[in-house]
Length: 377
Ligand SMILES: *Cc1c(COP(=O)(O)O)cnc(C)c1O
Image (cartoon, rainbow, N blue to C red; front, side, top):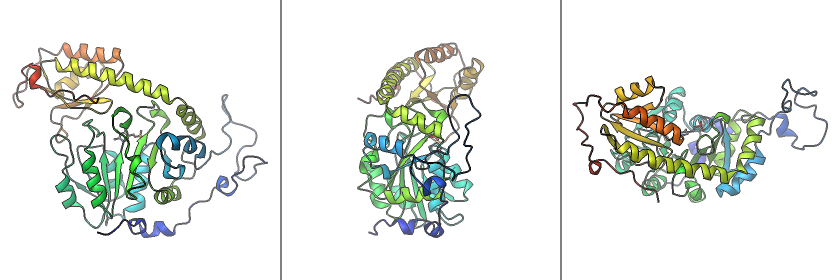
């Protein structure tokens, strides 16, 4: 079997690109008179804080603190403007438009496909199985010599479940000419270790995480990408020089010293998820609640569209996934606070006289006929 070679995976011109060299790259000291970056020396036009100096282009303070938390080396970390940025950079670093392809397993997160489309990169789609696991034989058969990226999302959005570790490992071992990306946006809500622990075993492994979910910092736009030092160096070479703003860096650093608070919020959200699932299960027009390792539930309703619209009318907004393949009749519901979940349930309870669809099997209201929410413990 051919072994992994990063050089041959990258677009040829990326190897020879000379990156922009910023003022903060050329002089990295912190003391002195800084007349090298055409900044405003006097101050900022805002009342709070001084933002007149460009931020650290490599966010070393965050990486130094994040590395021990994640069990990786600082050089294995790339920080992006949301996960969207590393998703796009990975496509641009490896896929020649009109020539290479990526492989995705729908139903999954939409940005992998969008980034490929923006870059005119072909997409191979191998659907997950009906219980939202990897169709391993079909995936292995579909990989071509020009498949540069294989996207796995675990826990998967919109289904909520973790993908089986064996399947991920099989792909990592088989796909030696591709990067295998495991998007772990929801890993803090799952009871399994992160794939970051395997980075030194698999040079083709890339792990994505984010500050947007468990850390409660979606507005900051800060995504994490973990991979080999060699691949991270490539991403650094092609990123916009100052991609993470100074306020974002400062707030992320503060967040990292409040890891216990993150864990407390996760515990609360998981407790609310269990209560919400139990209450949803008692509704006669709920057909199934898919097992979740994340902070949302994929719920199948007799009349998804009508339910969605009824909720909207009462200003309860959920995500309509009912037309997505393998998600027939499903709404994706984020776990809210207890009050928010109670409001959702109260609105749903005013639905129970709604007509029942004829094209789906009828819910009996008997709990035994509904899939149980799988406990993570
Ligand atoms: C929410 C989410 C992200 C996070 O995206 P950001 O750009 O970091 O906010 C990434 N992947 C998946 C699957 C998600 O659901």
